Amino acid sequence: MTDLRALRAATVAGHGEDEHVHAMPPGHRPGLRHLFEILLEDLDAAHAHDPAARTRLEVALAYSGVHALWIHRLSHRLWHANLRLPARLLSQFARFATGIEIHPGAIIGRRLFIDHGMGVVIGQTTVIGDDCLLFQGSTLGGRSMTRGKRHPTLGNRVMIGAGARVLGPITLGDDVQVGANAVVVKDVPAGAVAIGVPAHVRVPKAAPAEREKLQDPSLLIEYTI
Image 1 (cartoon, rainbow, N blue to C red):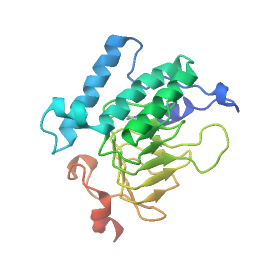
Image 2: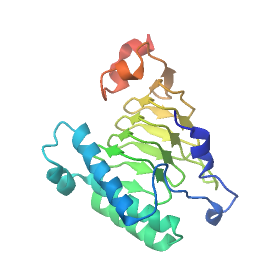
Image 3: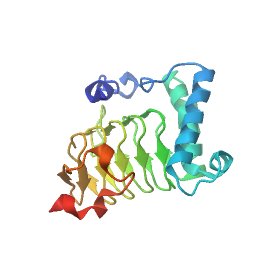
């Protein structure tokens, strides 16, 4: 079980931009060798999740979600080393090249897969756990321009559907699923689904391990009955 309070607290400190604590993601260590291992995990995750992927070489060369994530891994380490301007420039290059905007201060766990990716936005104080999935057009954003923690915290194995908006310093527990085009502005407990505008939270009868893999919860109308 992910300690979401600890993850969220890792990005909260003080009132000014320079006072934020931008910790290394859980399970990450300094060093190029370990970084290479993380990048290979990202490649394997994309290959495993996408039924259209034929080879790892194709994924490495042609998947913008993987490219954006790899560049973020580098920019986040620069940000963590207090090289803020190079980190921002690198993240802006990734945005230009892939259409995916990830702030270098965001903490992203292992094996994230961004499917298609165009229009995905991940804010500065976002925290994402392991084995998560983001579809195209999804936003992990803020609801205000105040300083401090203002973006979501996601647990492990969270799925965010296409066009969904998860806004504010809220927490989505492990195994949460957010339906396509949903707007989530409140905490969602572990194992629940959130669909609609504003999102309604339902806890399905089936345990997360028993549900169909990667099925968008907006298709499962029995959750809303």
